[in-house]
Image (cartoon, rainbow, N blue to C red; front, side, top):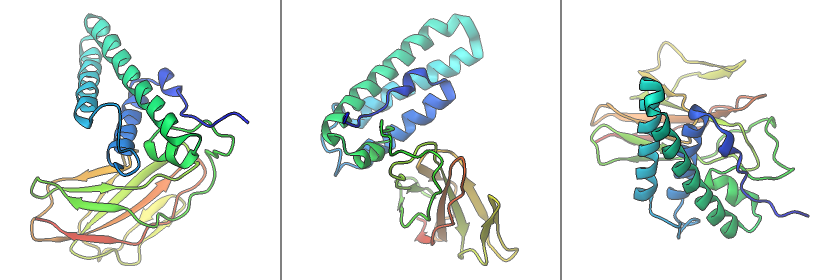
Length: 224
């Protein structure tokens, strides 16, 4: 049986898909230092390549052909950086599909089911950043799943009352406080502009091609 490794499909990704994937891998490897303790280069180096690629993509979108060569060079450097990390993850995982999924890469496994129904997210991490009024949320990945988007809901002052997800739509009560929703596909969310001294409640759920996971139980934190 062929050993499971990281898929290299990102070589074919367009700008938007690659941008999302780059974030997923960074979150997967550099926020899970217990598992990925010795990456081939530090997060700061990865961030430098990521920012160079993002800036080149933005310039290319704005200025067109005059910035095409710079964009291609930056994209190739980003792909090479991902290739280096994929090789590192393959060596570390040694065929373990859960480790590969945790890294943000997609495993080459027949047991991966892109359209399998998703369950409730049991737990996720919330923490204050060094910036006042800012909270970071990191949602763990679904193992053996691809094509999953992660959503986070932030509620001010009190938890949701009689909330529900019906036919893929989130319903909240008129009695609920101010509600913010991060719909980016990335597992790491950043809520900014929150009111210091106020308690906020966070919920997480995920979606894929065939299902919407139930809303998680809330986790709360006082913002400083």
